[in-house]
Length: 606
Image (cartoon, rainbow, N blue to C red):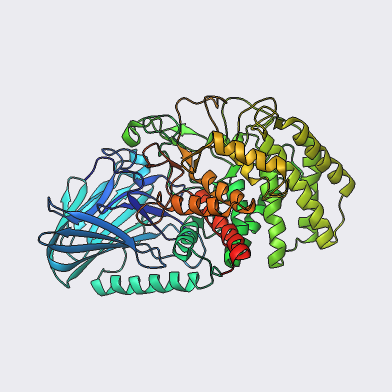
């Protein structure tokens, strides 16, 4: 077992409430349950010795490992090839289709020999509560039972298991055509044991889970040039959406570094207003109305909760159940991925002021009109009060989209999105024929526009810049034409795009900004942001630079991992960095593919 495999060396499985990562060596080295944001059970990816893992793989020195998904599903197949034979481990979690929160979650592992003879070894070493809780073990003929203070777990196999201290191990030798089954089930303390496990029951589960994913993906309206890439991305977004509430987590993991050995190690298992709101348009474009609607309801609930209270109408991020409580702390006992410390849980950026979120939120609500999600009158009044508040409070420094910890600035992107919120709000008034203080909104919108044009432009750079009074470029402004602040072929915008080409783009990959030129309060550097690269593709396509846009999009595909997943960043040697997979990256991929498809169709036809 590699002490720390590459971040990208994993596939994602999940049941729409929790998720796990499986490495190409057959190791579950990340799993948190019963929710995405719950304490971990397996976290060897953050601490090899203390985190816990669940390995099933052949015991052979000469192994070649490959990984793939069953087509159009979230069923992951890890293949092991050796001189003695070829074996496979099929990993999946049955989606809970009731959409009710549950404490019971199952991870199935179907083990089989394809050719020759393969001997598999099993090691199950859970470490509950981020490795902070001890557990007791009972093993009998029905399997193993792990007792932890806040959780119980059952390990079942269709071959013998034995205790290894407080952990479990086992071996099974399979001939070509034979298979075995393993199931790991978690539940609250005192939960009932699962039904006895049989190989046929695991095969039945494979069939049912395949049917679920094929049935769900059949809704897709995508008919463009990159169906496998886009569909893998939308499956990934679905896997990271908490079904009981419709909230999308930013990533399935926490603590994975933006720079190996550095301190930029954040917990991303929460719902950012920004990410979730932008997902609405992407989901609607692909035909996934239920998912878009569920998030809109979650978003409106957040606005209702603040009704009549002082302070900001929205927080930057929330837990998946809508709780605003995300205190940040460090797990000092975890060494971190390749000694990248501290490993943080919670996220202190929840308390930051990020004014751009109102633009993304209103953008999402505007898209809801396409699915006839017109607001009730009570909802409309809440919406109006939000924009009334924004019209009075937009002109303030904030921490910005990148959640800098170096002090507030007058970020240009934040102002642009305040403009977008007010502009879309005015459009909704006309579309829905509802009452609102349109004079106030219009005056504020126009004031924002004038301020950005007067103070957000740098003559030295020939570009709009990160914040007023600076000459630093910022890739977040690639969204300016998409939200309609400037035309996609406006000379000022094209000049900004050219400046970004010179300053932020490296072999088609895009940096967020230069931390050395604009200190963000943190040590170290970072890689290029995959999200920004896809936004760059979108902007290029809108500007009519189709050959450059398509080449950049195609080249970016070479940085995906072996099963089509992206983390947050690409490092200097092309390695993936940051939490994995990242929803915002896959969301931006879908946006870029749709924009580029439409532009190519308009220019050249199908």
